[in-house]
Amino acid sequence: MEQVGSRADTPLGVQALCFDVFGTVVDWRSSVAREAEALLGPLGQRLDWAGFATAWRARYQPAMEAVRSGQRGFVTLDRLHRENLVSVLESFGVADPAETLIDALNLAWHRLDPWPDVAAGLARLRRGYLLAPLSNGNLRLMVDLARHAGLPWDAILGAEIAQAYKPMPAAYRRAAELLDLKPAACLMVAAHNSDLAAARAVGMRTAFVPRPTEHGPGQTSDLAPDAAWDFVAEDFAGLAAQLGC
Image 1 (cartoon, one colour):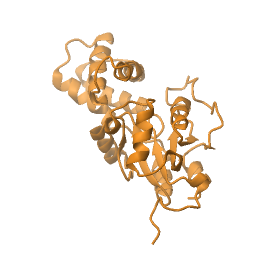
Image 2 (cartoon, rainbow, N blue to C red):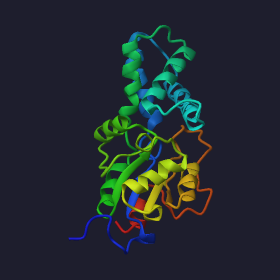
Image 3 (tube, rainbow, N blue to C red):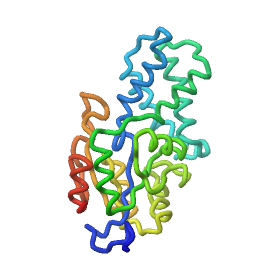
Image 4 (cartoon, rainbow, N blue to C red):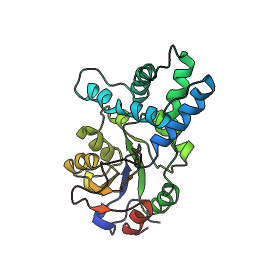
């Protein structure tokens, strides 16, 4: 029997699909807003919950850049999220939150819901390809998220495994190495043009799947492909169709 991911007749010779997760696979903004309201609302907090989620996420790239630049050693995204959360709570006027509350709220990122097309789309794609996240999320975060959202990964790859945060080239190269594939046999699937540009730079194939409400109704970025990516699809079902699944 032919193994999944071993066919030679796939489009562009792709054998494995590597997925950005936050924004591409899961709806972090709505999910974090829901979790924050569930934990902080009963304590009497009345915040702009979507604004809270957005403010927390806004600290994501600067925190990782300190690691990418060598300003600090590699630490997990869970740790960076927690450090950022303390600052966000303070900026929203949540005074002296208990350590247990901070820990519980930080786990919101482990309970993000998938976009509506994800479950069926991944099930189709898995019939013909190896599937793995290539995320800046750490291993435990990705495992918990897969169990919560029903994500049928064949492996967990990404920043913690590579000890490098995207878009550092090592994050992408290490994923291909661990799958025992050349980068050209790996397809990076993302809703972010910058992620695809970094993947293409190391030789990966690329697929753009827009998520026009990732940042809310007023989103202005990543609404359309800004380069000639190998595949462009409205959702995972469309991508599966293009990949023969």
